[in-house]
Image (cartoon, rainbow, N blue to C red):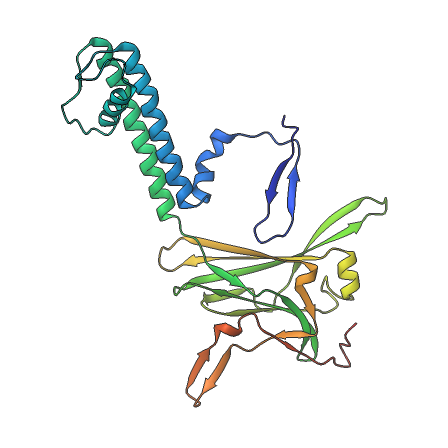
Length: 297
């Protein structure tokens, strides 16, 4: 059992989770790690595996000998012969002439087929893996809308394609203490006025009305800080180009939730006929005035 802490950074979070007691399985999770890591890491891992494998077989050729036209005890020639064998290049300048060398070639050929199949499958899976490029407003805001206090945030698709049948979930997380004094991290669903969109393109304003049934009912900026309130948002939909399910998520911490502000309008009508979507205002906020039903704390 692992006793040293393992550090995990949550996407979009400004804190780290230290996991103690984890039982690592690096070989079992290596494939999934390469799928998530950047392309240069995957290419580096494949190239490194290729070079290490050829270096090992070069040592084997040095031990058994029998490579025609290779300089005696030359690791360089043995390595280059291994590369030619594994890559099925076969220039013909060097070739095995002993039984031991031919057996090493057989083993290397089997290894080459296996490594090629694994690398091809990994590259294809990574290349065909569809991901979303979703953008979330920097802040969530709480302000009156139609006379009711409302939590609002904005999200949009940064690609020119459509995410069809997009569904959004919002979860409120806060710190509570039980009757026994124990710390409890509670997660509560926030009901949005619209949790589903036929097609997600550039902009979508998500709204949660803070009524008596809302987990945010009666909260103030001070109480939100005390309870360490966080908002986690998850969006899932179908990419219309690849026809694969994609998703994106974002965290809003207490300091990211502003009171008395609303999201600036990004849609304007021109000449009564055309609509202009100004993404430069995607993160902009506009101050609002308190109302009798919603006086700001």
